Length: 67
Image: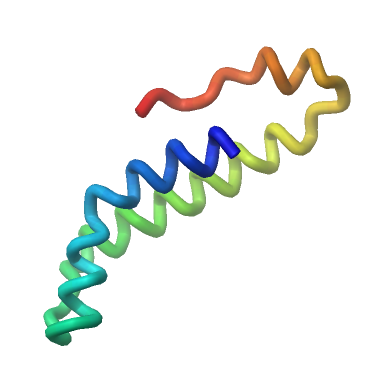
């Protein structure tokens, strides 16, 4: 949950682009789309790393990214 919260916070900084696209049809710049996709990929990778841990201690010791 903490990991998802971190990445949701990072994505929220560009959510206004998606809202504007929804409401007004204004295109989202490609660099923003690429950055958002990269964040989702990074989150998925980190989630897989956490899920690969075999003990609770390993999970607790895993360092989450900084906001």
